[in-house]
Length: 208
Image (cartoon, rainbow, N blue to C red; front, top):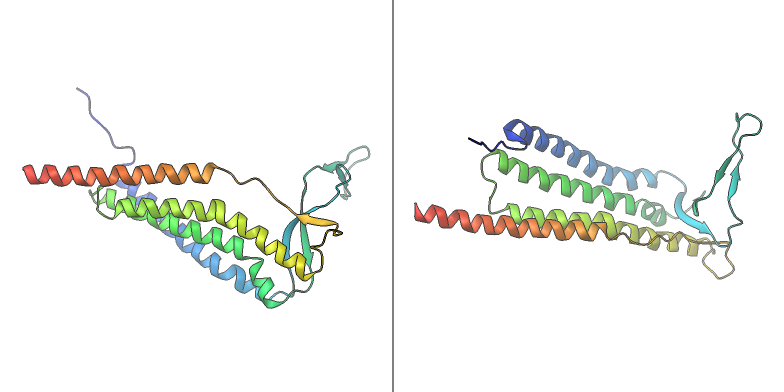
């Protein structure tokens, strides 16, 4: 005789939902605090790259023994500006805020799904919408936030007159990952499965 055991059970879903609610609250608080805190600073920073990198850069680190050195081979660099207008200072934290909002929304929606499962209603009529919203949060944090980072960096470079063809700096561009799109599609598929499960559950209830 075989029995099917739940993967999480009541305790697991209850604990998982509670942790996700806490994560959502912390992330939402971070999304608000980051730009507000940046407004209290005189400047800000953005990610850029050297236009004509001269090979690997040897880092001058104190405390290294003789014959030991550290080489930085990455193209990414951080541009710090001592003074920026208030609007640009807030914008430098916009990508991080969007990422935090995506985490907050995603954690909250997933917690609600787990809570519905904990209550014995896995095919709650709201779960498909929650999963679809979770997919949108993945796209926001994984695709939109990195794109906004480039827009903000462009605005800062233009303000500093470093956006021309003669500038020693360029935007640090990375190829957008397809992983967020894949995760979003998987979540949409799960949402559709939950929707169909809800419809099947209603049919079974009508036959009883």
